[in-house]
Length: 352
Ligand code: ATP
Ligand code: MG
Ligand code: MG
Ligand code: MG
Image (cartoon, rainbow, N blue to C red; front, side):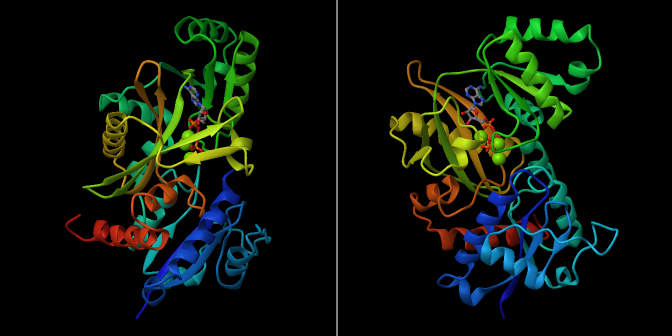
């Protein structure tokens, strides 16, 4: 008897397309080697408008990789296909808002069926860069200087805004990074070098989110560590990303050839160890489970390591950093998805 795995992908986020590619890779992995005898895949595709598709339509999207949007025949977007009742374990591979942020995790918790990855708290804390940074600060993890700003401060009060910009200039200086708190794939992020750019970027970020964060820019190498496990998680070897663009923006992330991954990163052994320890601390700090990719800035000249962020549902395509880090640590793709499923079952058991 095979375990029926509900593969949940697509989603109402800017990372919809990436999610489909991740799901295709995972579906492949579930058909490889020993997995083929253990798991049966039930695909569930969430359209960009939030409508759930199952069966033939979901299978088509999974096979073709092409998003679909069929007009819903019911007024309730939250009406779920009847096949959801057959699912014995959920594998959500949704990136960004409405998938990586605890919303889906709350729904899956209510189904009382185990699911891969972090629960509500870990997902929500990891997604919101302000909550995440508070948790990291409490854990004593080094971070760049930052300031939090609200949409209300940016839009509603003409007296507050100039003061706010003054404060950012005085405490963070240029260049600084303006980010909506709850996004991924660098969507809505701007690197700014002047007052005018700062004002435009804040206004733009406020169109994405009520919560905004501004960070001091660092000149550093970008390195990432994968974490796998529940209460006794393991850290992978470190990977590095290099690119020629101004920063690791959306275009650089998703245009083939614009960024290169190096695994393992060429780092002093001690630095690699420190990064692994910090990745595990970060995982615990936000209460992540199953998997996460933790991103860092390494300033070679001073030896400083700053944590940038945690991603609780990182990109999972066959060329993504997360599975590649594990492949280089001795866990090939098919074994990785198998272990994630085992971890979901472990976490769901009554004592956990
Ligand atoms: P992901 O797709 O990994 O979820 P994200 O949208 O959450 O990304 P960040 O990782 O916060 O965004 O930032 C995206 C990129 O912007 C970083 O990889 C880096 O290139 C650049 N960046 C962000 N913050 C800083 C900073 N404080 N100093 C220098 N570069 C930065
Ligand atoms: Mg992120
Ligand atoms: Mg992300
Ligand atoms: Mg990032």
